[in-house]
Amino acid sequence: MTQNGEERAKSRRVGALAALYPFIRPYRAMAAMAGAALVLTSAVSLALPLAVRRVVDGFGESIQLLDQYFLAALGIAALLALGTALRYYFVTRLGERVVADIRRALFDRVTGMSPAFFERVLTGEILSRITTDTTLILSVIGSSVSVALRNVLLLLGGLVLLFLTSAKLTGLVLLVVPAVVVPIVVLGRRLRNLSRENQDWIANSSGKASEALSAAQTVQAFTHEAETRRSFAEVTEQSFMSARARIHTRAIMTMIVIFLVFAGVVGVLWMGARDVRSGVMSAGELVQFVIYAVMVAGSVGALSEIWGELQRAAGATERLVEILTAEDPVAEPAAPLALPRPVRGEIALQDVVFRYPARPETSALDGVSLQVAPGETVALVGPSGAGKSTVLHLLMRFYDPQAGRITLDGIDLRDMARADFRRALALVPQDPVIFAASARDNIRFGRPDASDAEVESAARAAAAHDFIAALPQGYDSYLGERGVMLSGGQKQRIAIARAILRDAPVLLLDEATSALDAESEQAVQQAVERLAQGRTVLVVAHRLATVKRADRIVVFDHGRIIATGTHEALVAEGGLYARLARLQFTDGAA
Image 1 (cartoon, helix red, strand yellow):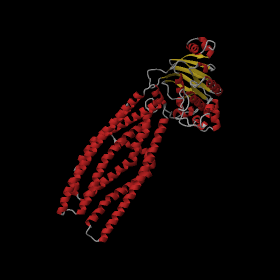
Image 2 (cartoon, rainbow, N blue to C red):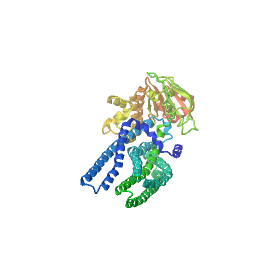
Image 3 (tube, rainbow, N blue to C red):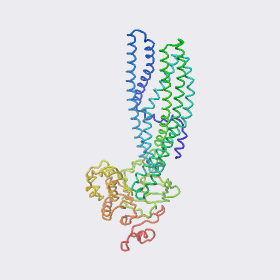
Image 4 (cartoon, rainbow, N blue to C red):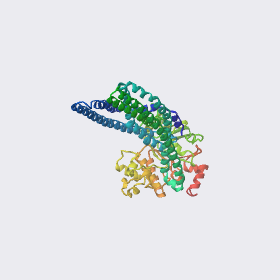
C-alpha cells in the first residue's frame, strides 16, 4: 500500500462523507424534497400502529366504526406509498446527479495534471476511482443515507411512542441498547479498515489490468501471458481475500446485532403478554407496542447494515478527495502573465538542471543553456538518454526544472498559464497517440474548429492523404483503439498532419520521421521544411539525414551540450557528431 493508503487506513471516521457536501449543495432543493418525503413516510409509518390498535380494541364496536378504522388504515397506506415513491424519485435522482458531477470533477482534475503526477499514480487506479469508488458513493447518496435517516426517524419516533404506550416495557427494551451498540462500535472499526483495504486492492487490480491490456501485443510477443496472468491473479486474489474478511466481519456483526435485538423483543413481549392477562394493558396496546418494538428492532438492525455501507463509502470518499485535492507538481501561477501575441517563438534555456521524479539520482539535463532565435530551425542530436526529448518535455512544461529557467519570448514558462503558451506550440511525439475515432477527428484534434478542407490539406502536407483515402470510409474511417488499424508510419503521419493543422508558431518534432519509409520520409521532410518557414522549429532526431539542413545542430551527451554548429562544421570538427555521422552515412555522403 502507498503512503497515502497508510494514511487513509488511520482515518476512522464516517465524517469523511462530509466532503460530498459541496457536490450536494447546488441541489439543496432536490435534497429538501427528498427530506420532506422522508419525514412524511416516517410519520405515516409511525401512525400505522395507532390505527392497528384502534382496529384491535374496537373489534367489538359497531360495524360502521370498524369500517372507518379500516378506511383510515387504507388512507395511511396510500400516503405511505406516495411518500415512498417521492422519496425514491428525489433521492435516486439526487444520487445520480451528484455522482455524475463527481465523475466529471475527477476527470477534469486528472486531465489537467502534469505527467509528473502520473509517475506516482497508475492510470488504472484513477479509472477505479472514477468507476468503483463513485459507484459506492452512488449507493450511499441514492439509497443508504435515505434509508439510514428513515430508520433513525423510525427509531427515535418508535422509542417515544413505545414509552407513551408502556413506560415499563420501554425501559426493558432500552436495556438491550448497550448490548447492541458495543459490537457495532468494536466491529465497525475493523470493518472500516477492511473496506478501505478492499478498495485499494480493487484499484490495484484495475491498474494491473489496464497496463496489461494496453500492452497486449508486447505481452504476447514475449510469450509473457502466463506471468501476466499470474500477476493479475495474485492481485485479484488479494482483493478477494480482503473482501472475504470484510464480509465475514460484517456478517458476524449483523448476526450479533439482530440476535440481541430480537432476543430483547421476545423478552419484552413475554412480559407484555403477562400484563394483558392481568388487565394492566389492552390487547390493542400490546399489538401497538409489538409493532413499534419491531420497528425499533428493525431500525437498529438496518442501521447496523447501513453503517457498514457508510464506512465503505467514507473510505471511497477519502480516496476521491485525495485526487481532487492532490497538488500538481507543475503548479499554475497565482497571477499568470499573458504571452504577447503574435508569438515570435524565441526560446531560451538558462542553466537548466532537471531530474525526472522517478530517477532523482540522475540528471537528465545538467546546466543546459540554449538560445533559439525566432524562425530558427534547431536540431537536437545525440545518443539515447542524452537529454534531447527532455528539452521538449520541459518546453511543454510537462515538468519543471529543479534549477534554471526556460522562457518563451522572454517570459518564464512558470509565470504563464500552461494552456496559454501551449497554444503557441505544436508537438509531434516519438510515440504518436491515435484516438479511437475517425481519421478526420484524429487530425482535427490539432484544431477542433478546422474545416474538412483544412484537415485534408494538412493530411496531404503530411503525406497521409493517399492511405487515408484508401481506407474503407476514407477520412471517416474508424482507426481503432490506439490506432490498431494503422502501421507505425501511418500513425506518425497522422500525428504530423495534426501538428500541421494546429499552425502554431513553434513546432516541436520528437523523432517525427523515425517510423517512415524513405519515400514517405522525403515527402514529410519537404512538408516540414515548408511548414518551418517563419516558425521556430526544434527537431529531435537520431537519423542525422533529417537534420542536415537545420540552421543549427546541437549535440547532447549525458545531459550536457557538447557541441553546436552546422552539419558540415560538426563533421569537420570531429568528436561525437562526426562519429555518429560516420555510422549513418557513406563516406561520400558524410
